[in-house]
Image (tube, rainbow, N blue to C red; front, top):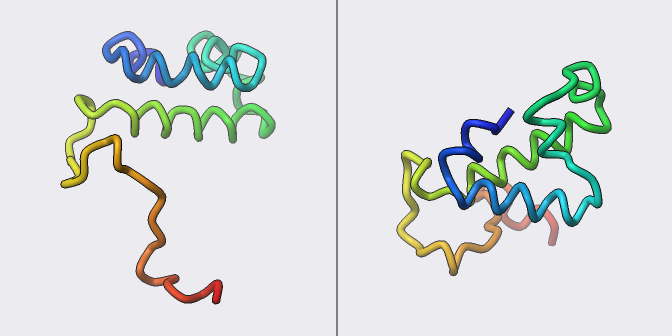
Length: 87
């Protein structure tokens, strides 16, 4: 999971390293090398899925669609269908 992405794109590798540092353990090692039964346990699978998504998001050269905004100005946006739901 994400091993190929990290090998091909330095941005993905840096994101996964930052996540490992933040979590205080090698989630990326578990993602890359398993064991699968440990990776698929909920407490590991959910952060691994999020980490993979973050690595993919931070890898513009791996993305097929580009946004019109430069990466430095990306910020969370609210989907139009939930606008005003929290007010």
